[in-house]
Amino acid sequence: MVGMEILKPLVVLAAWTMVMWVWMYATRIPAMGKAKIDTANLTGGTGKSLDEVLPPEVQWKAHNYNHLHEAPTVFYAIAIVLAITGQGDGLNATLGWAYVALRIVHSLVQATVNRVVVRFLIFALSSLVLMALTVHAGFAVFHH
Image 1 (tube, helix red, strand yellow):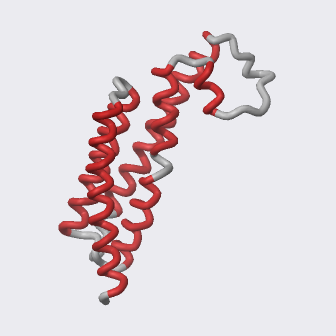
Image 2: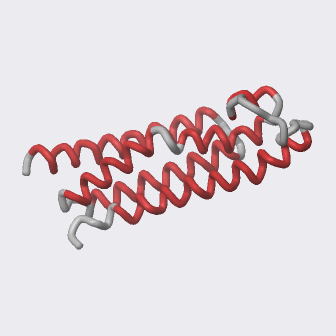
């Protein structure tokens, strides 16, 4: 169908988010055991409260998982708009793949070495790509 190519990177980013979910819990649950957190009787609290008791390297995965529910939600909406308006192929699909690639690289940096300046550069580049997609969606909606 015309304009649907952008849905492919959308699905890949959603799948990547689930990969980060698995990675987060695969590291967090053992770390909670090492920290002697009684998970059977644990009530209340937030993932953020674990920042005080778990190693930073463990929490980096959780922080990234949360980040994948922030700016990428705009990508999901814009990608769907572009697909619905038949504008999700060509340049917009390429930009969609670029956005997803940058977000995956951002995740890998944050979850491993977590160098803020590197993360920021990748985030800024992905944001510029997202802005371009948003402008294209605006043209698709307001000029057709």
